Structure formats: C-alpha cells, structure tokens
Image (cartoon, rainbow, N blue to C red; front, side, top):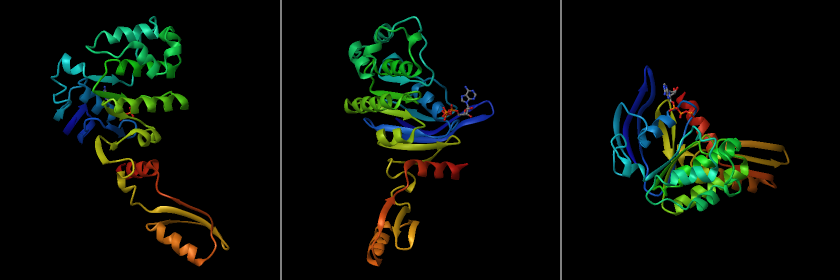
Length: 274
Ligand SMILES: Nc1ncnc2c1ncn2[C@@H]1O[C@H](COP(=O)(O)OP(=O)(O)OP(=O)(O)O)[C@@H](O)[C@H]1O
C-alpha cells in the first residue's frame, strides 16, 4: 500500500489531513491513535469504502476508488461494525461468504482458526459480543486474502481469545498475507506489528517499529535501586553507566532498569500533538 497526501473532510470536520504511509507486502502494520484521530477514515479509503478528497492511494497496485471485483476478492475486511445475520448459524454464514471468493479457505479450517468450532451450529443472535467479533474475523479471512484490514478486531475479546487471535494474525502473516491493523491496545500493537504509525488530528505524528517509534530505544530509562541511604529512582540517558557507577559505590539491592513502554511513548506523542 502506498498513500501520499491523503485528505478527507466530512462537512466542516477534517478527518484526515495529509496522511502518507507505505505498507510493505507481508508485514503487519498497525495504526494507533486516540478516538477520532482519523484511523477508520484512512482504512475505509484504503478499502475502497470511502471517497477521498485528495491524495494518491495505491493498494495491491490499484486505486481502491476504481478497483473492481477481482481486486476486492484479494482483500479481507474486518470492519468496526459487527455482521448482522442473526437467524443464520455460524457455519451457514461463513459458508455463505465463502461463495463470494474464487479460492476460499475450507469452512471448517476457518472455524478452527477463529476458535468457533464449538459454536458452529449456534445462531449468530445467540453469541456473546466477543464470539460475534470472531465471526467478523472469520468472514474477513475466509477468502484467503492477500491483504487483511483489521479495524479494532479484538474489542470485547477476553484475554485468552485475544491471545488466540494474535496467533491467528501471526499465522496469516506466515501464510504471506499483509495485515493493516488499527487498535487501542498497545500490547496488541507491540505483540503483532512489524511497523506502526501513530495518528493524531488526521496526521501521522510518528512511525517506526514498536521498539524504536518516537525514539523509544534512545529515550532515558527509569532506574530504581535501594542502598544504605534508602530507595532511589531517577531517569538516565546512560543507564548502563549509572549501574556501573552504583556498583562501584557499594552494595545495591532491588536494581531495576526500565526503558519507556510503548504506552509511555504513545502518551507522550499524543500529549505533544494535542
Ligand atoms: N460519517 C461521518 N460523518 C461525519 N463525521 C465523521 C464521519 N466519520 C468520521 N467522522 C469524524 O471524522 C473524524 C475521524 O473519525 P474516524 O472514525 O476516522 O476516527 P478513528 O481514529 O477511527 O476513531 P476511533 O478510534 O474512535 O474509531 C472524527 O472527528 C469523526 O467525528
């Protein structure tokens, strides 16, 4: 995916204000940002579901605004709003969607991958919120997509379901799919993303790997220790040097060195952009 100068307004509200990004084939790319930052609008333009006001967009070599059925069969979408087909069973709805694609995954494989095998015969209306969300994911991957859009896919998942879903995303990547993920869970971005971008006010304010974004790898570290004078805590741009110095001074207990977490960096970036 290649995006430059993407803009979109709704009436007087500027939702996306000059976004540029590139997603390489086979990577998991996460878009992070607060509510209303412009993530879904960006994703919807890339999916071909929303018209843009300006900018150049290429997805799998085509402009989503003009791409046809064959292009659509190569992408999978898990949108924010849930599927509504309450009277059908889980298996029926997955089988139904599989018919839209030229080379679908076997229905049982999809149910297994999404942790829905035990609920295959249940009507959608009888599922819990998290189980419904898994059906959305199942419908997004049944077509064996080259590119998968996951817009806040694990909202409402319990911790075990979230871990299973992470395994599913990794197996999608291992099978060669490219994944664009939006999420509010920073641990999810850290666990899954090869690269990520932070978006605020319709602009990308930082981009990098989970380890390096926003200067995370070079930011001062928090160092805590206890010695004969009591407990101490300080930030240091040279934590290794500080630790050597502390060891030279005398016995130290409870030594901990903590680099900023992705959440620390994210909150700093968002705060600076506000
Ligand atoms: N259909 C619409 N009509 C009018 N304004 C809209 C519409 N969709 C989004 N907006 C506005 O555009 C801005 C960006 O919204 P968008 O849904 O892209 O943000 P988001 O980053 O996906 O937020 P969230 O994390 O809450 O899903 C917001 O100010 C929102 O109110």
